[in-house]
Image 1 (cartoon, helix red, strand yellow):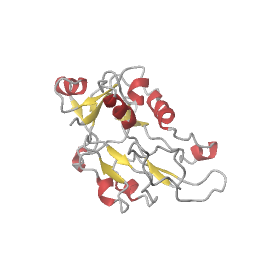
Image 2 (cartoon, one colour; image 1 turned 45 degrees about the vertical axis):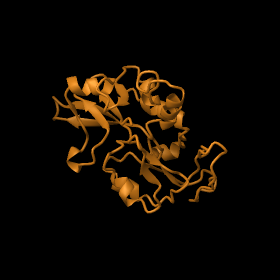
Image 3 (cartoon, helix red, strand yellow; image 1 turned 90 degrees about the vertical axis):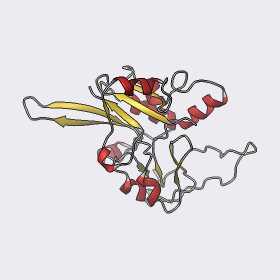
Length: 228
């Protein structure tokens, strides 16, 4: 079984935020109203953070793209009372919208701030539970409805692309990649099986210096960063 991971080259990243826009388009994430943007409540599954280093006049700004880290020891899974967050066998941390009750314990537990609470109906401006189908289709899979307000959302490494590629016999990491990696004009994002020594991500990790965010938390993220 593959273990999917992502490698982001900070030396190539230009901060254009094409990854954030592609993520919104791929996952049908609402753009939010101007008021929500002013209040910093517009949902983003993939963000680009600017981190300052040093002091003026030698201050340097580092741009860090940040999807969900898909931690091996994910604190968001432990605290969810509804079991809406769980690990797949390939290591991807999934958010089940049908089980999510919007308590946001996972948001508090996540040390990376990459989860979003998609809240308040645009018309009624009220919180409400989603009314989602609870039965599988004839093929034995869950239907994939458009999400509604009142659930926690996050990056899923575009697992729907991965699953379709596997069914069609395509190679994930070269023929098929997540939307953020496909849209990056600088090719700063690589994706593949981190346990396959022949994959692009494994080659980069073996030949370049890398780090993971907040390694002291011992969450074992599957997103690695190459030094710029």
